[in-house]
Length: 169
Length: 343
Image 1 (cartoon, chains in turn yellow, brown):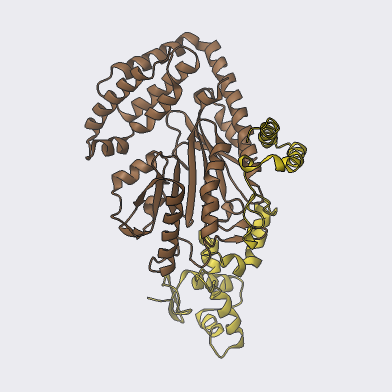
Image 2: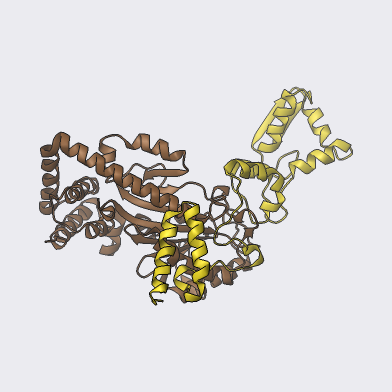
């Protein structure tokens, strides 16, 4: 049975008041409780009136209730509940909501091995694939690793430089 | 200090998704694009390693029909850390596992792809380089979901960015016994490093085996994650060494007695329960660390997964009762301990 209000999601709560009863999905039920608690509606009839298609406010509210990724259908409330994006396009669709959260997680830009992959650029070559022609590049990388205190990385680069200088490929 | 005696194995895992296909928890299973994706994964894996296909349910992957592995096989793969427990609950899930069991490419777990390379000992960087070969080939053939700034897009945002988890399985009996682990876990949690029981989240450590891994990947490069993990592992090894010395100084004879009794029990038992085995083998490993027993630690580490309940049943080719398993375990352990004696 679908929610009596949004007609989209399954019923999860039944509200019984003096005005009558309504079967609502979790999202519409939560919104009902919130609007009632903040005094924006007095009861069920007010709530249903807000969603009336002839009510100009309803269009806005309905849009936010149905705010769902056009590609996979993941809604904002589902994203908040499950903490999972439904597809790659969700990252664009919910970007204004998610960006704050990414900031909290650390926020820095990804600068790893695949940086630039959005343009289908292959990640950098591995150390073992480097040849003597790459020695100047490796010396630069060694200095960078030392400056950034990436000691194990510096060790690995140093080993490769010594191998290449010793003529080992 | 011998790090290789404390570090059991090193694992690198990548989480990847493709564009134009809903993430697995939304996936319905009838998309033509899903079949195309699975065929490509199978073809890339076949070009990179010799492997076997396992699926949770019957499905076709790359022209190969898989009947769907039975629960015993799936649980055996979980016990051996070749698939995650979550994969077994995914209707469209499966994995392609290399014959040497070092590389596993899971599909339709939490993300479309969970690639992992697991190597014995402390070899995180080597595991990373090996897995990168498979990963780069997958990037060449698939439309991998990636966004400038964020990096690899994953179902759960905590895996964003490098989409990488580096984990190391460590044997930390002394830190556990002296009660220092709680404090250490708290300290590393603040540095985005998690320490937990070896069978994953919300489980206790069996046989003092702990998994140490990075928590978040966002904003971090692969090198940064590996370097951080390497420094944490080295520090933990040093702390474990110190704790072992402290225990020995306080009650050396009691520890020696405990170790020798454990060794005797494993050598002579004819019926050996799983928990009893885990406790005793941990004591035997500790004995090797103290120099009381001359046994090859990597061989002991390889023995442990071989005598886990589902692995025994799969080896026997039939469902074994607990008692049958205990008898079979006792025999395997006895023979293995004799074989792994060193001079």
